[in-house]
Length: 217
Image (cartoon, rainbow, N blue to C red):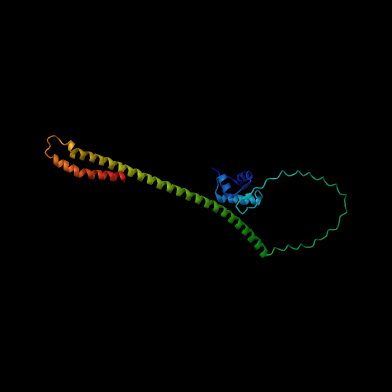
């Protein structure tokens, strides 16, 4: 894809009430440095005004077409004149060059203006970058918070599943103990019936105590 030219940039800028470097770079899809160079050339050409303290250039509105100047009438022919003697012109004195210090001061002033303009643009871009950093930090903090909540929910689910498995195992053990030790489940003519009754009376209260602690916890 060809890089937009300076003329493309001028057409884009003339459709805006004001323009800055980021807006021109995003609108044309060009680098920030090229957009800044285009805007500086437009300021010199009068397409935009001087940059303000916030990094914006006001766009100058184009004036109407210039009035057509009528050609001046041809001068009337002068009557013939007698030849006049040719006068010698005195030698011209060359114009004095501007003092070296004055030219240097003007160049330094122009350089300072360009530096101030670049500083204003950089400050505006720095503010935009700071806003982007703050937004990124906020998104990262929200992501970490959601991650912590997800990990906590997963831990609760695993704990509940483990507790449910423990309850199932305890109920199965309880049924086995009741079936093996309860006197009502003893076979007929069981010789060790007194021993079963004694074991059941000794073990079953402890089983019920463990069950109550599990429900309370």
